[in-house]
Image (cartoon, rainbow, N blue to C red; front, side):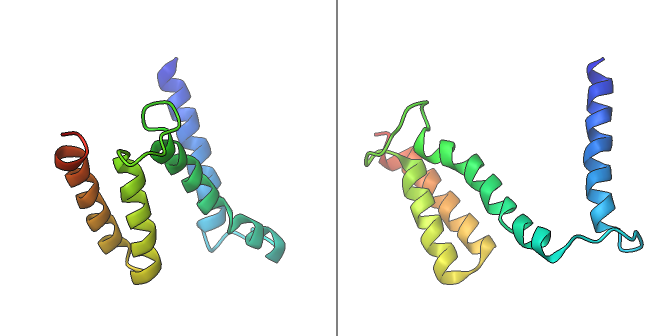
Length: 106
């Protein structure tokens, strides 16, 4: 039964993507809808990273020992200044690893 649910959800996700990405299909979204959907990616990403950064142990943690917060702040500054996704990811992950392993937990 679980396998059937997985297959059904796979079909739903695939078809919902395929309908809008296949250029030969005559489905076009309006300008207003496209503008509205431009906000969906940042909203979803914020919903993912927000609890990880601010609630790493299940409760609000805004102190100096929060490696997630420091790495997120660094990533935000790097992304803003460099506009380079790979550089931002590698450096902020490296800083997070250093903070988590050597600096904040000892």
